[in-house]
Image (tube, rainbow, N blue to C red):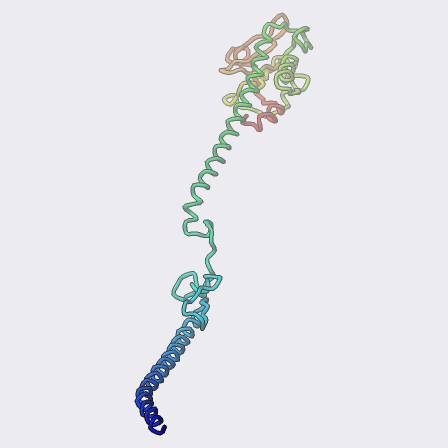
Length: 269
């Protein structure tokens, strides 16, 4: 029995001797692993502290990857970048871009072109309207040729005198009402130089002799020195020339009626 115990103890001794170095080795490995982990944590904390000092970066001790904040503008802030840092953040959009003049130029050009085209169109339309008014006057007057002269006459059916003829043409061609006689018609409207006369202007004459001063006759100017009128007894509505000796001697002047001025927008119409 003692011999068996001794034999068992003898068998355990080598095992214990072999186990001791292994335990020591295991202890050293665990100690090294623990120190390495502590160094890693310190290094990680140092990195995290470094990132936490960068504006706009979210640093976490659980991760080494920095993430930008929701707004990118703080991260871009730098005194070395123009327009950032202490300066106001640039606004976004074409109107605030350096390309704004280039982008806006075609639009401005198109608007200016459209406005100019519209103005030219309006001017052309006004000229056309004025021409139409004058043409209407002359056309109606020409259609009344050969209507006989009647003192105080006011219509084609009864005949015309000079002022009645002019009044009828203006009223029925363009809807303008003129005064009742040639003297009062002369006082109505804008004086026009002979060189500036246009179709539809009124031409006035003094045909009453010395005993009857003032305006006594009126006609409607056509063009090229010609006018249409209802002359006198025994004659009919006809075309005459301002250059004829009789009319040239008695010509007083030309007027553009106020009603015509209103329709044409001024004295140049």
